[in-house]
Length: 211
Image 1 (cartoon, rainbow, N blue to C red):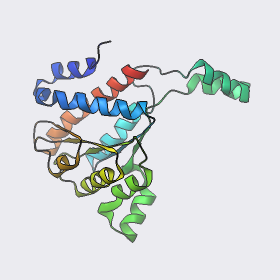
Image 2: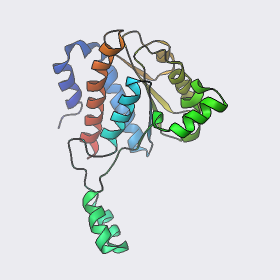
Image 3: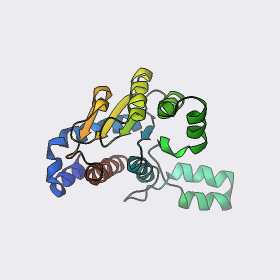
């Protein structure tokens, strides 16, 4: 299938996203490089964007529209370890794009909120998780969510890539991102209505390239 096929389809379905097309393509390439080099994607947002973070991880960590079967070599390794259980695992396990939603760790986030400073929580997770070739993917409808901005700054300091998914202004987040995907609108619910098809297209693009 042609490279950027799903992104081109996205623009056909949502013509209002045409001004962001090249940035969406750049984001797809940054995520591809992350995967090729063995990195992982750290995703964060608040409220509806937190739900989007979890949703995106769900599409990356398992088959989205393709089955992503494990290799025959890995299947045989499972069978060599335990024939019966290995058969179940070989049938059920799927190849994944490593991704973590930073909003999902309630014990850590509440401890950090209580003991240190809640708005620095995502940044602390980036500090702890980020290694070479990772990417931080920050979702903020305004682009001004302070905890996401702090995380982006920390990601830059750790030397990893930063992708921002925002509303039409980009907010403060754009100042720290390698690429900012700015969708139309400033009202959160309208921005979020565009965010979902954008990250779906990115997930589909990655799956098509590697699985």
